Length: 573
Image (cartoon, rainbow, N blue to C red):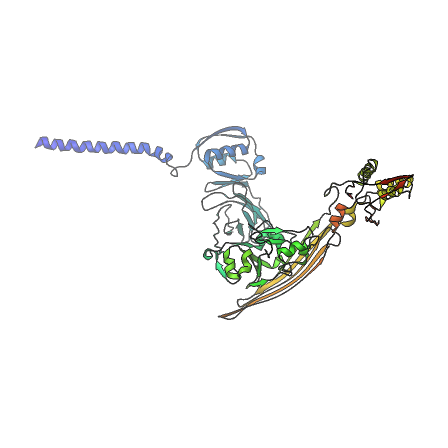
């Protein structure tokens, strides 16, 4: 019995010794574990500098601590000769030693340190400004550059975040102020200004759903429900400054759409082809539909008619189905390309259908909108547009032709050639021919200067829209002056448009539209100034008249009979 009791006693004494040893080990390791765990102890800084600037010290502190430090560069650069030697010091202890005996104070918010100058005290109350700082991030924590930050009370006072997402802005003390923060693709944020000096603003993505629809002229359906080959554009996406017609804004924007211009005149409207030239004799133009109404061409010409008129005539100046439509009144354009267009509009739509939807009013207060633009066009010149012979070069060619006894197929009846022919016919003298040669050699008429001019075209559009939940309206006026560089080549268009949409009953809606269009064209049929300038010799005076009717030449000079044979073509240039 005694032996068993002794064993129990020794076993209890041994357990107590083990517990004491465990407690001692834990107490010895606790400070080490406390400093090693992040967030449980303060960060220890070891730094030693001598005679350094405050800016250098702050850069080293940022590298050692991982804190972001904001300060005014002018305030910090003024502090020099900083001596510092610390070991196992906290960030606040280092800042206190650095800013000792300076006019600077610090403030720590999260992982950001703000260093600023001490505010001067004033003897009388007055409205003061203070500078606040902040950083803008997205929901993933990435800093955003280029974010606009401005005061709600004064939108003109604002700033933009730098490449690291930081910003600084001055606000007035004593008043309630708010910051408006905006960025493309993000929801705008309104941040109240408090006594905090540093702000962290998080921007959220702006999600918008846009329902794409297809307008066929007879109905409007969702794009995903349409099996037809279509292409839709918003006019505001393709509108270009200086465009005065719908064709001008569509050029190069629509896949598969061809615009064939007959000339560079502003009065010349292009031929539109969507599915190529499907026929050599019939009409290959697409069908134009404006707000559900098919528009007929002013002159319904087939390809055969176009070929018959194309010999020196520009039929396109007469206009097309939409030549009187103001591009600023268009909302969207839909192109129907495949057989689905034929199913809706019949065989006339075999070349495609272009559906135009014009603007209409919306349920809001009356809105007045004006759009205007100017377009400058430089006239052509011999230096830029045509590398042609001048008068001296032209007369040298003519002299060489006479010296080589070459013969004109069509004998000119003007200028040096006329005097030489008269001399050969015994009707003139050689002195008259030489005198005429010298006169023509220096004439050098500039036909581009006489027939062309620099022009300025203008385009104006004024619209008024508005309405309520039951009735909306849209009224517009348009004026377009398109002036060509050829003198006398101008186009002027006046347009007026009134559209009213009203709900007469829950089961009855009305769309009333009235339009007016007047297009006046001043142009050329047959010979144009461009053709004349390129084909007429510069040895001719502007006011000179001449004929080229004689086609043969024979006679005698000093009793010697002659007759020209093997004629060549005479080039007036």
